[in-house]
Image (cartoon, rainbow, N blue to C red; front, top):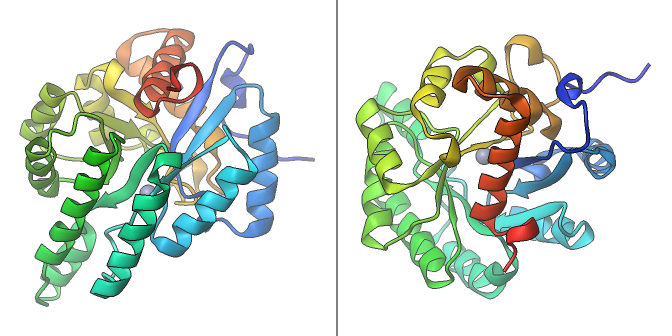
Amino acid sequence: MKERLSGQDIIMNETLQFIDSHLHIDLYEEMQRNVMIQEIADHPALRAVIAVSMNLASSLKTKELAEKYPNLIQPAYGFHPEQELPAGEQQQELLVWMEKHIKDAVAVGEVGLPYYMRKEAESQKRSFELQPYYDLLEKFVRLAASHNKPIILHAVYEDAERVIDLLQQHHIQRAHFHWFKGSDETVNRMIDSGYCISVTPDIAYEEDIQKLVSVYPLDLIMVETDGPWPFEGQYKGRLTHPIMVADVVRHIAAIKGAGVEETAARIYSNTSRFYRIGEYRV
Ligand SMILES: [Zn+2]
């Protein structure tokens, strides 16, 4: 028997619509990806995924998939910060490529600062140079600003403060801090700036995320899976699938004391408006 997809139990009618606002679709194995794309396409409630990229090779793959499945796969191009930086020439190659193709993407991303790599280096008493990552991020911020594209950020805890400073210097308004975690002060600054966050299935078991959702305005919240990243709790051992965002919406609705349908509709509209897709396409 086919495994029941998570989140199906709340999809009671076809008026519900969901977007997975942060998925690494290029990182799935080809067979898994083909099945998943078919399931997204056939699903009555899944409208699209925002497909972020890790580097140039990943951006090329994302572009290919987005061209094959228009509307369903909405591409974003960038360089994930939790990896070794490529040499200057390769960075330049990526930036030149992005300059050429960003008009066909919905955003710059995933980009940001390497919090976990830096912390690991510090715990092993290794030196870590953050500045080159910051310099590259600034180039992505400039690119997003000059093309009026939103930016998808991997920037957590104290790194988020530096990133907010940078965004404000460049007058960036559409910023999406995916899977955000940070202090109350940073959260308040982000809310005041009108920056969006997105929430993953870990809301089912992470109290910090539940608390974050309780204070963050619903109109600045999106849902995501960051798939194929694996989750714990009820998701342990299961392949991460975009339909899991339906569960995330259900948890957000419960925390906000709102109906699932209303919450789903607001989150869907936040995401389409932010990325200018669907009815908000310009
Ligand atoms: Zn990611």
